[in-house]
Amino acid sequence: MKTLIIIRHAKAEQGHGTDSMRRLTERGHQNAALMAARLVEKGYKIDKIFVSPSERTKETAVYFAEANHLEPNDIKYFDDLYLGDTLQITETVNWLQENIQTLAVIGHNPGVTNFTNDITGSEIESLPTCGIAVMHIDCDDWQDFNEADKTLVEVMSPKD
Picture (tube, rainbow, N blue to C red):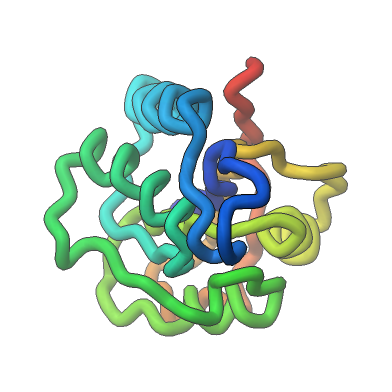
């Protein structure tokens, strides 16, 4: 059994420069720290993080990496995760070559919500900023991700 954690980036500023350069707000920084700590408190240990290359996802990833004591080589950036939807997120997960236990993917809406709903059959209306969806993937090796049963275990929000 593997664990896939889908994270929407934390709250970002509006209307400053290009979309990909938008940075986290103060609340975004606070929520990213809160949610990273909450995952650890719940017993989840992230082994690797795949991240969209936008500024707000990179900043969000820092909190989750620090909370899990990850090294820089445990974080990988994928252009396809920038505003990527189900297909792009699935292809990114399929890139994983290591047989780790828990992978986190940090991206954007509507893609992260659509991906979670599409692969688990759930009906999340919208993952909020810094919202998290935790899934169990019924496989022993990530190479079997596409065919494996996927179960939504829990959804967390900074407002919980």
